[in-house]
Image 1 (cartoon, rainbow, N blue to C red):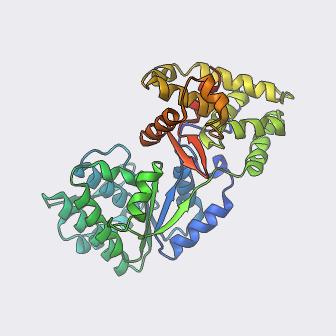
Image 2 (cartoon, rainbow, N blue to C red; image 1 turned 120 degrees about the vertical axis):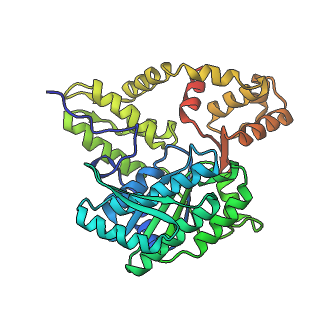
Image 3 (cartoon, helix red, strand yellow; image 1 turned 180 degrees about the vertical axis):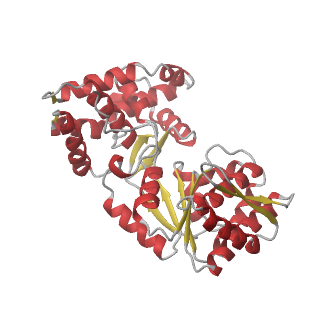
Length: 378
């Protein structure tokens, strides 16, 4: 009988599939309990959504209502409203399936949401629907949040709403009007806090750090760093041991450093090594490198991605991959890639503006670690 793989990389995780982050959990629990807004940012695939899922599912008191809303795919004000509405609706049924209790909740909601039709949908998974009677989506958003706040106050309840990829609102038509409205709704919250997350840090932080923007200083900045390397190793080693596979520390350290600590990629490689590994085997640096090479060889879209850039940009990407974003303006590198310093600077600036790379602690890093590792193998 095949053993279940203890590593997951293609979905949000919690419980046994969630690794460490005790300090982050303690911080965010404290902010939530004290109804403090949080602006959490990091590159993609570090584990923001899984961290929120773990806290909401396993760490908070069950009396605290939670909504986890991903707006990455929205493109209109209507879609924004629909996503926010679905998140609020899910608050009420997430931890309650008793129909009599849900019916009482519906009665209470009808008193709070005066411009919405509130109904209980009976099925194997009961749900509550808040169908706004407003034709204007801005007014519908106002009613949604003020109704929610009223419900919390009347029932002496607390809630936290996490909105993933919050910077997406900047790309919508009427973005300024949306920001201004949401700012008002967030600032007038009662018994509720918000977690705003984003992977495009420049866009997200500009919303909260710019004195001319509505969301200026409307929360505490919280950069999310990679999982601690030693804690990640011990967690991974324990899971490989379920199949009597020994994970060499040097091998894991190599993977962690090469992948910039990216949670998803490390989990993906671990998944493959566990799947293919034989009992009593040892994962060495060589096995780790071979596994990464096989994974990257299947990424057929990366060559097309590279071809989409100008020659100076392509050379800049190769330099950044080769040097891990450090000391890229040496004359040796400029000569090797037939670039001048101004030309390389211009290429780097354009790649940052496109969101392909970003700067942190005076280093340049790739948003997509698989792209970086693939470039290193060229």
